[in-house]
Length: 325
Image (tube, rainbow, N blue to C red; front, side, top):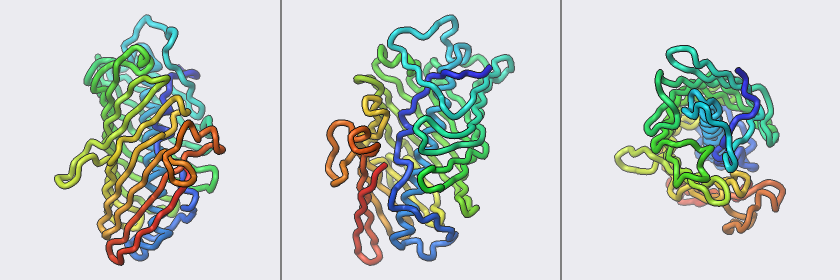
């Protein structure tokens, strides 16, 4: 059965920017040669931003689909009521199989999203264990991502994502009912294979803790949930396209607000690399690098701004970039 009007959280689809405007180089190097040049640091930062954004988007689509079927969500016999949150999916068809032992949801992407900033093709399959309802605390589903190809409209940059992720409804409850719920907590882990336009493939891992509250709309607060024994609050780790290992920590919780069109309104990433390069990205700024007021997403043509500061521990140089997202 195709669902044309699903409850979809676009909260984290807005998470991280789809691009750094200064990062237009789609470098094809596969080793650490030249990996610390300014252009390549920007490329690596852009890769991280884009993959983070699209991984979050898959999570949001899956949660939308889980909420969109009453047999799977556990809301049998209930219809949407006043105050319930219901958002359409623009670029995919969703099909449910609730008759098999393991219930499945298949999402097939077919083109441009609502905002028109990127296109997607590929398939995502969600497996729901027998007898489980998504609204129950501790419920977990497995997501398989198959050849999900994302192309950014503004510059044609593309990536392909394959892999698996697990979403756990840690607290229980449904986000469609968030307006009458104190909070809802989800935990997400993933093992992803990222293929860049050059054909180079890297393995990345994701671990995030997401707390949803309601304040004039949905508010999502996101932190990293992995520890490597030295660093906590790790959200993503892996190897850049240039062969450099990295660890990305969320050092100030990322906040996404429905009242600002689900934009990332504040937060900070800190990135440690094996080549002695460190970076900090601060979100929710204006074009001058100051903390933004109001919702610049509508005030300045569609962007908040972020500040990227990276330090080269090999030569002591520090570089700063301010970019829209």
